[in-house]
Image (cartoon, rainbow, N blue to C red):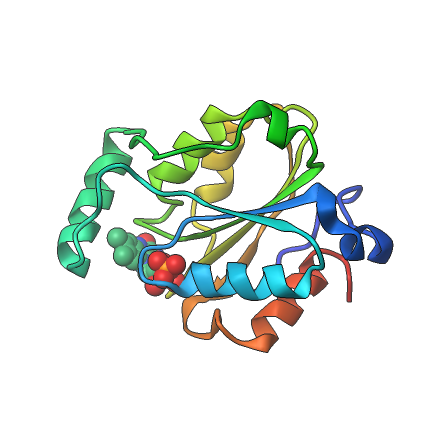
Length: 179
Ligand SMILES: Cc1cc2nc3c(=O)[nH]c(=O)nc-3n(C[C@H](O)[C@H](O)[C@H](O)COP(=O)(O)O)c2cc1C
């Protein structure tokens, strides 16, 4: 499933290949989103990459992590993150490519902690989910709620199983308006 990119948020070939103004931000529990983020980082010349890390680790058991994630979502928890991107650093970026797994039908709450910790005014944000059911769930709505001043593209759902493939990178390029 490829959602269309909102008009006005397309990247030009030139800007992508001189992408020092693009920051890739990702959260990953089991590695799918991380692989996609890292492959994309290699494909996009000179973009920077930032990993969202929580202070409290989630269980390595899927069932326990699913329980923790569900509880955090219900309670609208904002789990503490180890670090964020400083305002000074952020000011050099025009866009964020935001990659995350779907947890309990949305993004992990730590993604919202991150968005609420930065100044998103004027930023273009391209959300990309990885998941088992190839969905964005309610993540776009939640991301919009946590970054109301950003321009948020419609989002792309990548199947978790193929997140580490070249095909996934190509799909993301298409989503970004590059192919
Ligand atoms: C806590 C938890 C909750 C999940 N909830 C969903 C879900 O609601 N819908 C879905 O399609 N996949 C769900 N998944 C599967 C992940 O979204 C999918 O495997 C994703 O690609 C994992 O990305 P990661 O390896 O970067 O953590 C869940 C996985 C975990 C660990």
